[in-house]
Amino acid sequence: MLCLIIQMLLWGLFFVNLHVYQPTFLTLNIPDGLMVCLLYLIIILFINRSTDIIGESRKSSQTTYELNHIKSDKEFFSFC
Image 1 (cartoon, rainbow, N blue to C red):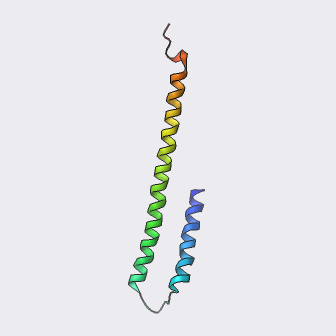
Image 2: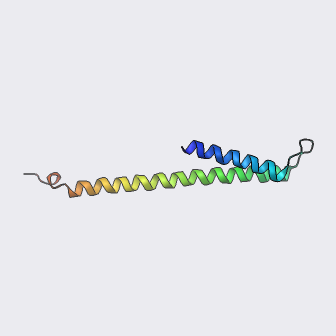
Image 3: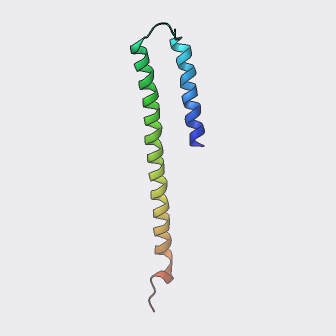
């Protein structure tokens, strides 16, 4: 699912780039090219950091759930 979202974002950026910059292939415009590269880089880094944060949050909540389950299990702490 995440790969599809990333693909849609990249294609969306591509079409926005075509619409906004209306590239002419005869001239080389370095500042516009750098701006587009930075835009792609920012979006990709944002997605990367977001997935890391969401993954850690889910892992933390799962660990908390398992620890609370062990604490609530009375047989786990009975040694007799």
